[in-house]
Length: 439
Image (cartoon, rainbow, N blue to C red):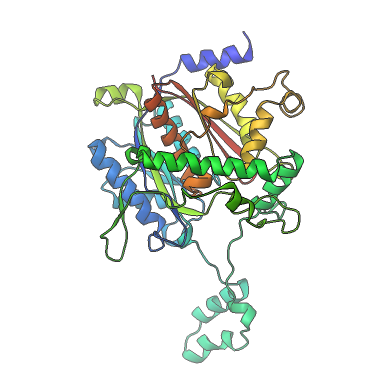
């Protein structure tokens, strides 16, 4: 029996995990409509709505797992705080995971594993991010002053540590979105990939325009309404928000071509227009064992067929993770790329998506990087991100992996199709791929 046959046999012998329901908030550009909402606020909104729409007895829930990238010191275990504030019993354990942009995917597969192991039957999973509410740190020297001051027994002793304070001491230390191992930001890595794989500025802009065009069409047809919860925001809580606000209906190649490079100012091709915007949002999904879903009378949106993770050297091509994880996920599923009815690829950057698609079709990549004799195959672009992707919809780091799975499930349902692939690249050279089936 070949390795692939062994993987398929292993899958067929195990119970299935059902995705019963899921929903998300609108994805909103950071610093705009959701700027007064924290990650806890956003997570609570979707968790409460999930319970209300499914009418599941909260006592049925065995575990809550939530992904996030920029945790707040005030909610270090964000999943637990969301669980406690949403009406889920205090006896239900909850934990938070982080895996950069694959954090919600990690939460999802952790939930799957908990069910497959027999530890749980019903799990709430998902991800959330409020980049508007990102943590800002003080300098190390100022933190030392605060610590020393706290030990003072009188006003003079408490004030003494601050007598030599300088401007540099009180300057905020804002977290950088850069690789610690290379010092490069994700945008700089995307530039590197564009050059390495000969992805032109025109190709990148055309792909970005496609994302906005398809997302705009989906909005007009109200396709996202089913997966979205109307969200009311402070201070008046009067006007509901029910649309992703990054989608441009008036975008053109001319507009995109006029944008300056964002990372390599002189020779670059990656711009704000062909990159995903920083966004705020949340997404949750309800997972059950197939048996439990049937016993409770739910008709699942779909089932988990397989999944796989990958990791590569960040010094190479940082965002190529999907090209490594997807072949393994498809092997486990006993399916080919050609058999995928729909494909959702996280659009961090146009150059990243196009680089991975080219790697899928490259025999040289398969031989040199994957030790495979054949390329994974050509991707039918008409099956990829058919309602737009992260470039248009937005990218709340911790929530995107969940949104992609949810969008894929509803897409398969609309088309009465069966197999779908959801894949995410992530900082650190990570990749995640999930194969879903509707029936």
